[in-house]
Length: 208
Image 1: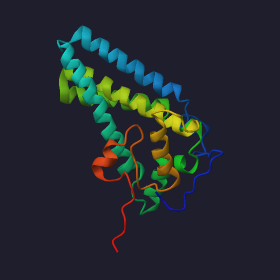
Image 2: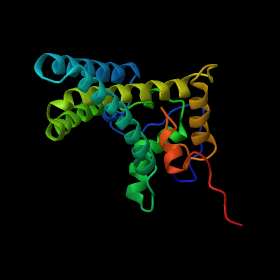
Image 3: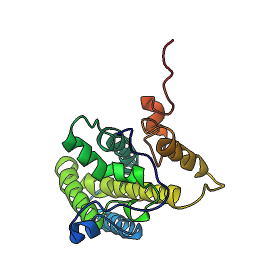
């Protein structure tokens, strides 16, 4: 993350001169949530009615999908959204993908990918997982998409509301530290699991 990006708790920013592209870059949180949950339910229904997967296989693949998404969430956030910006092209790409969110973290219209991107990603994942996993994809991908929906929900709550007095408070604190203290730590939003595994839960102390 470029060091010059400082968070502003109010306002928004126009990313594109084209009003169409600008509109497409924004979405209400309910839209992608509806897309992912509907797609997940449809795939599970297809798995039950059109495949020979057992109940145990379906449950295990669904749970594996949820856990797999949490790893993808961490990896993409750390290595793609926070990629090194050593030239102008990478700097611009990083800002459009994620830097604008760090500059305006409370802009509710940019707390989730726009619908067109959501539908495209879901379709590509279905084709890819179907090719690799066969019929198992119809229970694995729903778990992956439910994990995605859970991440979006938690991410929205963290940015749109004050810290809750429940189990989500720790997630709120973690993500706030990522935004307001150090953008190079705590990349997991829905879970700190992979931050503990990869050692990015806390700042590394300098050797003295």
